[in-house]
Length: 352
Ligand code: NAD
Image 1 (spheres, helix red, strand yellow):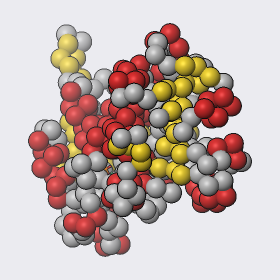
Image 2 (cartoon, protein in one colour):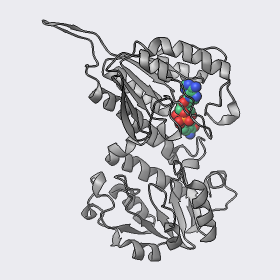
Image 3 (cartoon, protein in one colour):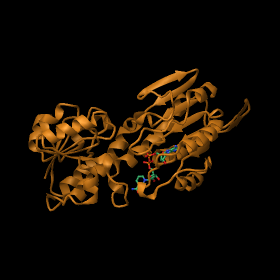
Image 4 (cartoon, protein in one colour):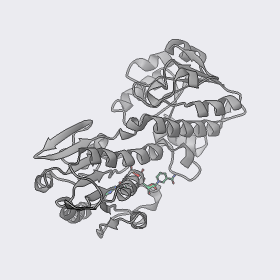
């Protein structure tokens, strides 16, 4: 089959030189848009077995087109009858894009809808990117914080370790906890899923206990929407920690809904000046009332970073993981040079 990899309008790329070799070894042809990997540290010379094309030629010659991010409105008219594999998760124009997809008879597989099952784990771009974002959230906070993380004793006096609170201990939250612990912080975390408690404790952090969480096993590992009473109790428990925290990382999300607001404006106003909040849930509304997506704001000395896209700042590693996820998906999708039966559970979940 003939695969075309686009140059995205962001630093990540959906193919790396090592995944290119895997495609070639299966007998596929690979076309790449010029300079696609440059911002991830891969020059065109690194992809020695690929053919480089302009976008127009790449689309004309490929059966399947791949990219990291989805497409701008209007651009899908150029992809009539093609198969597209990409990530449409955070696109605000998702519904309008669906109409364009239908009109142009395009088959789209949205990698953000890969089911969270054991068999699909190696194709799960959300987990791959969330892990990197959790790590970067702590690094970003450390950059903005006017303190060092570890306890330090010097002849000039001693420095206390910083206090970190993590709200949402899923893939991103756990990586943030592990990174903060490695830097020497004292870490506490909250999550309504009971399974998260053991994971938090195993990383050496404290778990903030709140009774009355709703759990649903059929939600496939995701948290479900919590009752008003639970969220109120949680806010109360968490707020006691927030007013003493130096760094707060928020990752709390509920699949298919707006993110819960766990930090109100009035709590931010009680927090110490200099505290840094990194809100990774900003693209789905944010966990802090004051968060603005893709902005850093300063509210009475508290810095609030609204950024759900931190993996793009680690483009080399993010591209390596993303392209492996893509390759594993394609390996599942194509058998004997044909698309497999569409009754397959993974395809059914992610086909638009
Ligand atoms: P996510 O990004 O949807 O949510 C992040 C976290 O926010 C979750 O841990 C969720 O429980 C938490 N949250 C929701 N409401 C909250 C609230 N009010 N307060 C605090 N936290 C709240 O989820 P995720 O991180 O992608 O994954 C969640 C779980 O699914 C994890 O246990 C993960 O290990 C599991 N998972 C399994 C697979 C698989 O089996 N293939 C793949 C990915 C994730």
